[in-house]
Image (cartoon, rainbow, N blue to C red; front, side, top):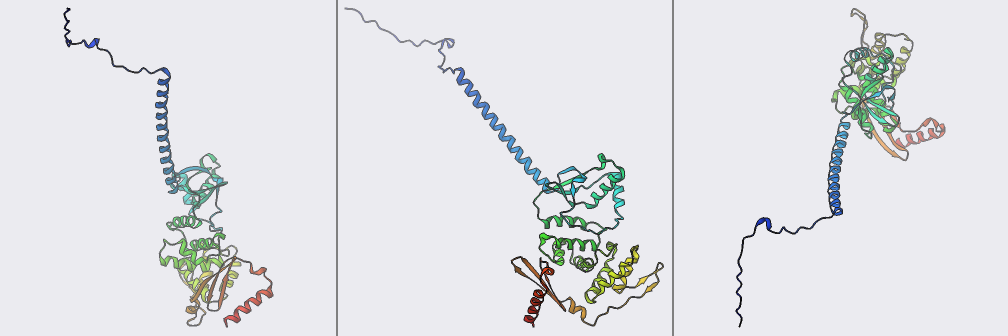
Length: 365
């Protein structure tokens, strides 16, 4: 009988160095390349996303600065057009332009003009006198490198015509030398723009000079009565003082034939001075005329009207009638009925036109 051998399990400490390493899966070259490529792709995508975000932010900032007119560039003088916005088309000497030319020549242009990009260049929005000064300096010096390019703020395309006119008007309002005649001429031009569809100049004053006070707007409306019929007969329209303009407008309101008489008197004054032209207007405005030393040459003349005539003339009714061809604006006052419509009534057969007017008068009676 054999003896059973007893086996004892003894836990012996093992040497750490001799301990078997944990099993790790070895990656092949292809797997490593794929992993590295994926990580590189993620990094590139993150970088591209950051670049797009920065570009978007810069684009928004560019638009904001452009809308504020803060994007400025040098543009050629001959690329700037002045046709989109109507301006005072009467040719007269700008006495203050010489001072502006001297200032720009000495210290440069401190306030860039403002333009709107167009298909063939730029349309001027603000800065007609600054542009004129640069053109004068270029003509005077012939230095195209110095005066052939002008700093310009870029106005974004797509703004309404009314907004562009308001920009030009608001800039003009801060000028100390702007005359009521200039402001009236601008309102007339704005109203006559084809896009405005026959707007009344008085309504144009309310839109363009909204930021001006009520009294100032009333003066501009008074000057419209002078500028509209006499604009191209006057050589020194912008020299008419406010008091003379308001007085003359009042006379034009109540005395028939006064505009034709003024035209006739101005026609014979070919080489007139400012004073000679204003004396003609003073005569018809009923104001006194003085000589160089302040003596009265002609006393003031009273208006040729019956009592109460002025009040009756000023009362009027206005309304608009929608037509297939557009709106017809009607103005009814004492002794007159006006119909303003975008149509050449002279092209209508006289007998047909006469019959229509007769029918209208019969219905009113």
